[in-house]
Image (tube, rainbow, N blue to C red; front, side, top):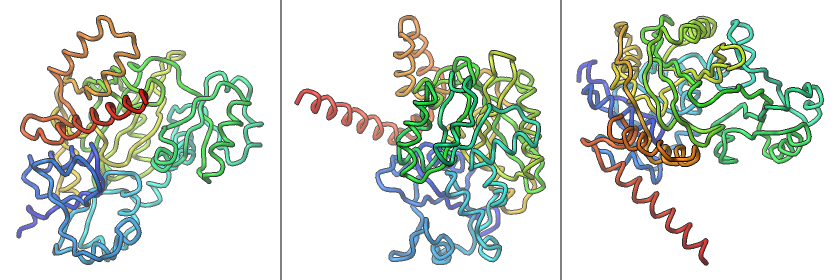
Length: 392
């Protein structure tokens, strides 16, 4: 087997992993997925589980031991979650020789994944960021100015673990007393949080700068997209978006360049910004140091960061991408339905239908329909069961 056909081991599940294996399949790169129970990724025509011998160590606890048992002479690792990218970054160099990956150092990732450390990073790099206070004890809330509570929320320092525990990305608070009550709810979990001022403005003021930086930390590709709708309305995910020119978000692009330079970052990234309606500044909300939900949308628009990461991991040159398709849309119809309903519906339903018919989708693809069919079936089943319980 030549270097060009070195396989990829994809670590993670859900929409992000589905997008990654579709991208790699189109590029002719063999990919194997670490299986996760009940994941609709299993229904993709491109899905192949990692051929790991049974009875081995749990890869989430002993990744080196698990990798050692794999029947690959060499394989590229492509982590698809914050926890997986941190585990991969922490591998000993002797393991990374056999299982290379295009990821940043563990120290750099810690400054990104920990949201308080990220706030400190943005301040040092001169990047606009919402006002933030680390809250480790209830008494820390006493130091927050009164006016901050007019529009604030408690945000986790570890988003992935927090969401798994509470089923939410953050908790909105309306007063100091409200923040204290919310903190008392969180405190027993041991999870660390911060209080952050909510950047005012509608969903359309959210922009994302996605891209890739190679082993020399040179940015080889940038892709900008604007959020058009989201659900839930405060701390949800994009449900409808479109690609926009980099020139339209030049200040945000400059902030990304500063962050990459400050971190000496390597790998795939996605930075979320919100333009503050008070002063027009693009304030960075967070940075994901890995593939994201809509990575397939970026690839279909002309920015294939997964294949770039593959070649970079193998020490091969990565050509720079200078152009991509502008005005291309991407919609997640199921969640966009709730976004439109929350906005009042009306004429927006026609826009919802047009978006569903004319835009890319993260799960449904004509050439690979089973993941969407499986998701639709189980979504309808869950809603029916909830309805039956409500009647009982």
